[in-house]
Image 1 (cartoon, rainbow, N blue to C red):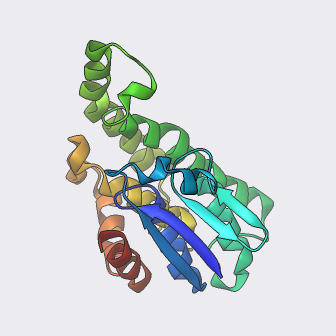
Image 2 (tube, one colour):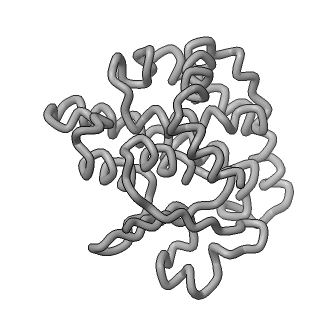
Length: 206
């Protein structure tokens, strides 16, 4: 059986959602970021990066959200969580998820993990203060240039939807009004109605 290590309020929610959507049997293992459990020796033996998510499979451990989402989609092709039969469309999906990972998530982290990039308290404070702007600009790009509708990639629901939902969920805490982005806000509301999302949120918030 698969085991997913996650922590509340993190990007690991996207992997929880994907596992629920795929109908895969898995054991959720919740870590406490507050208690620094992601840096404990037993977890570092599983994921030396000291971050979540980490998915333990019968062939080894997978880390990084993009890789885990692709693995889930390919493991259960009948769930149609990715356009696996079209290399171009699959690459478009990966590009969307890569933007969420390399740009949106990094913008968000500047308000909470500034010490990763700077030691000067003033520099860290400046990074944090800029987060509403950078997150807002990122979601303007998603709203106006990337989001196809009604789902992230178009008519077909994919693993990108759970990932986008996870990032959208962070907007209020980042000082960004979701109402600025009507298409994204409507997507967020649709996601909240999906049984898999409800199940994932229940585990995330337990």
